[in-house]
Length: 120
Image 1: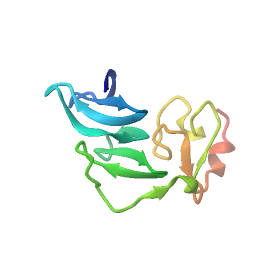
Image 2: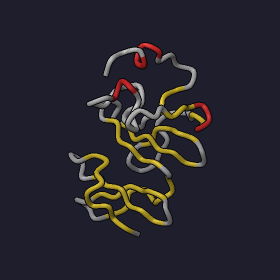
Image 3: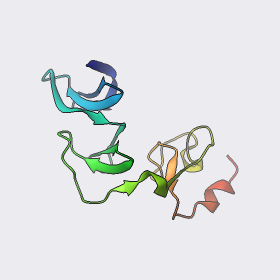
Image 4: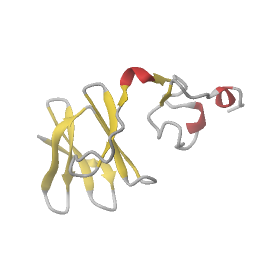
């Protein structure tokens, strides 16, 4: 298991990612312990929700630092679209936005025309 000491999920809580067999888990640097075993394809902390977006088996969902589901909403990967504009959605240009949280993916059901029509 590889502890990614500089890949912070939450700097204030000393949480970083761990990597094993191409899967991510959560490691607490202060306690020197694995909080969540590596099982996720993606982990990204969202401070505005105090939640972690995780991806596993083709679904995105919210978890806490111990891997517990925070709600029952799971979004299938095929319900999201990748916007190729410098690896981020247009609203992210120069900063992170609430549309894709820096992932460069947005809901296919959403309307983002106003973002593409702006001069960036």
